[in-house]
Length: 355
Image (cartoon, rainbow, N blue to C red; front, side, top):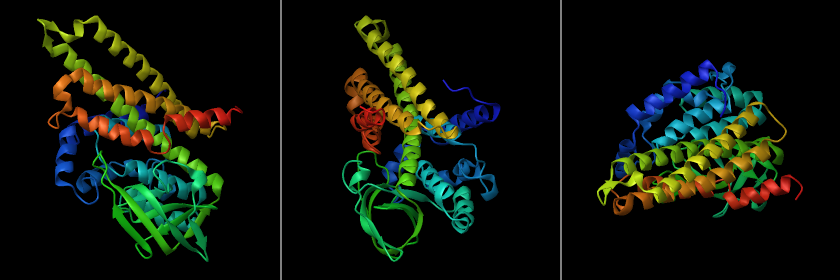
């Protein structure tokens, strides 16, 4: 478990309190039923921005706090617990691309707007149903980008795109040359097909920058998955302690105790791997790519297990829309595949280690 400083502890506690009071799972249910085009509650996002969360990875010179990726992960974890819908993860990843590769002019123009929540930004990388940067075909000619990106998170509302092309990352703003088509997925969040047809683009960096930014986006995603898995476990544990079957609480059945014990140990391993990846990013270690692949592989396997057990151990009620268990497994299945599933990252980890 990561050792937090006082500021990080306060940030985590504030995020947890806000999520529990202002963005419980019930708020996500209401958002899903209302089905806003953006895929999130704009008022809730404005509150997050006012608390400074949109600028956690933005340098202080541009209006952010520059708290780093471990701090960002703490917030994403608490939001993940309650399935709070926001563009925080996508915007932070896009901001990182500008910080690492943007020109001074691009930083001055966009980072203050991102930190204030005025601009929603996102990454547009994948071009097929699975994550595979090696198959990117998007091209740039004379400063104009053309290509189609699939399943872009927050693609319905973003006004700033960090686009992966064959030769690196490009910054695209506005709607000129940009088209969007909503993709309705199981998690009821924003996913869009985004087409770029001669959209004006500014280069941020080469393929090495693409890899760095994807790693940071993946680490943030793992933090959300950690929060989801922790809450799914806690909800299931509470249910087993109160549900009576055959005259006794389900938590007294040894077979169920074994299943809960297995999940608990897997969750501890998941926390270690996820926080290790976030710390590696903040320390700018040379093995960030390995740490991130380890975290995503462990996170994918663990969240898959816990969300599945949440359904099974709740029994018939877990299969109903009236219960929150379905929300967790639906979001879990989407996040498991985003930025590469567990199998992809196990293979990548082995390749990075020379196997």
